[in-house]
Every structure is written in structure tokens, then in C-alpha cells.
Amino acid sequence: MKFLDQAKIFIRSGNGGPGSISFRREANVPHGGPDGGDGGRGGDIIAKCVNGLNTLIDFRYQQHFKAESGRPGAGRDKSGLSGKSIVLKLPVGTQILSHDQNMILADLTKVGQEIVLAKGGEGGHGNAFFKTSTNQAPRRAQPGILGLEMWIWLRLKLIADAGLVGLPNAGKSTFLSVVSAAKPKIADYPFTTLHPNLGVVSIDGKEFVMADIPGLIEGAHRGAGIGHRFLGHVERCRVLLHLIDVTHTDPIENWHTVRTELSAYDQNLANKPEIVALSKCDSAPEDYVTDLIEVLQKTGVSNIFRLSSVSGNGINEVLRAINDVIQSERIEADNLGKIQKPWHP
Image (cartoon, helix red, strand yellow):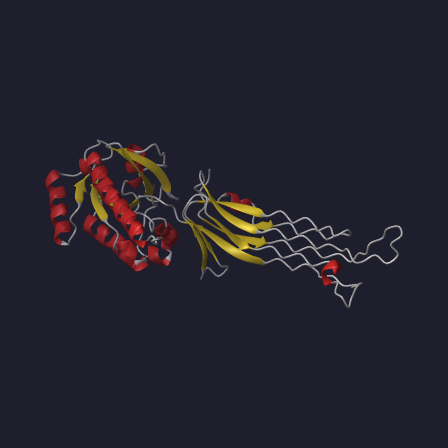
């Protein structure tokens, strides 16, 4: 299945059905009263968060969603049927934005979460509604209220516990393929990964979800290399695993480049717990790797690991460090939720 993390769609809720103008016509009742029924309600456009989806690809092939209008009312006080609503099934982590992308209308973060994006129009009243003591035979009925229509943007931000960041060709896809069942494309050239990949990682009986984010480049926070969209996928992560290729000409500068992009995009993202791993250590001299670690420690980096996805050296140590952060973050989030939960006597 192809990956698509944003789409622009048009939605329109159904119009309300018109009310009916009708009078009773029965034998021996020459002057029957009004019996026009109300029109049916228009269908809604509903966004629903469902499990089992991790892409917005379905919205590439269909961009227009229009709910049914309500049926007209009829005589004998018969109300019209309501129009059918349309439910947009969206993956966890989808944000719904206004057409200019300046306002977030909804943020779907839990399976089963629903929101009515466009409410259907109410049906109009039939003439029976307007009968009064002074007007026994009203000849008026209401048209239905029009539905709402608008263009909206759907933007998917993957929900993962850990996010893999680093410059292109830092070994992120290889690492994810080794520690999970994910099968991202792997090759020895930059920009092999063109969209995020998710994998479930297991260590010491614990599981967490890891996202492989396509390699960042300088200027990513401004959209260079569509990095602005890629950075959005790690906003919800609890911890970042920053891979640095020790075979690159300047690994330290690479670390600075990624940190600068994270800070420029969102300071909250830059403040997330970070674990640094020097990748491809089996292809560099031991003393050179040691020197790199010392330089990084002088810049304030504390969690630094040696890693080789090919030989497997250091993988379990890195995964345990990631899992420790995730578990502590989960406990902290649970405690915060208990504190904020309202008390009922």
C-alpha cells in the first residue's frame, strides 16, 4: 500500500428536506385540517478514527464527499426520511485542518474517536406546524436548511513511541529492518526512504512502535526535501533515536545539522529525550569512534551508544535505553492523567 500523509478533500453535508403543504381529504370531512409533515434532516459528514490504517491513500482517488439530503415531508403528517451520513475513516494521528491550513479542526489520536465536521441541515416544517387558533388552514411550509460545504486538509502524523532521525544514508532503515518485521527499502545511496515506515520492536518482553523518518537535510524545517512534513511525524514520539554515520566525512557536523533542524521546526521537538547512536561502527577504527564520543560528550550529549546493524553489536543496549525512556514517559503521562482527572464525590 502506498503511503500518503496529506490530502485535500471537499465535504458537503446534506440539505434538510422541505416541509409539505397538505390537507386532509377524507369522506364526510369537507374541510380537513392541515396535515403536511416535516422534511427529513440532511446527513452529516463525520470523521472517525479507526484501527488498521496508516496512510491517507484512499483520499487520493476520491476527493469529494457529499452526504444525502433529507427527503421532503408528505401528507398525513408523514415526516421525510433523514439523509444518510458519510463517515470518513481515518488513521490514528490524523489532523483535520481548515482549507488555508491555519486552523486545526480536529486531532484524532484515539481509535473510536469521532467528530462531526459538517452537520446536516434541519428539515423544514410542514403546514401542520403552522396551524393556530386564528389560522386553521395555513398554506405555508418551510424549505429545508442548506447543508455546509468546505474544503479541508487531512494531515497524518504517525503515532510512534520512538522516532529514528538522522541525515540521509545514516542507517535508519537498516536498523528498523533488523529490530522489527518492517521491510523498508534499503540501498547504499541517500534518500532511499521516501516515506515514513513503522515497525513494532520487542525487547525484554516489552513492545513499542518505532518510526523510520526519511533523512533530514539542511533547511528541512523550511520544507527542503519535504522535510517539514517528515518532521511532523516525530512530533508525537516519546523519544528520538539519532543515528550518526561514523563513515561520513564530518559526523559531528551531521549531528549539529539535525539538532538545528529539530530546534528550528519546534523547540518542543528539540527538547524531547534523545539517544545518540553512532552507526556503522564496524566500518571505522575503534579509536576514531572513541574520539567522536568524547567530542559529542563535550557538547553535552550524554546517551551515546556504539551500533552496527549489520553485525548486531550494540543493538540490544540501544533498544533497552529507548524502552527505559518510553516506560518512564508512559508512567509520567499516566500520573499526569490521574492528577488532572476531575474528582466526583
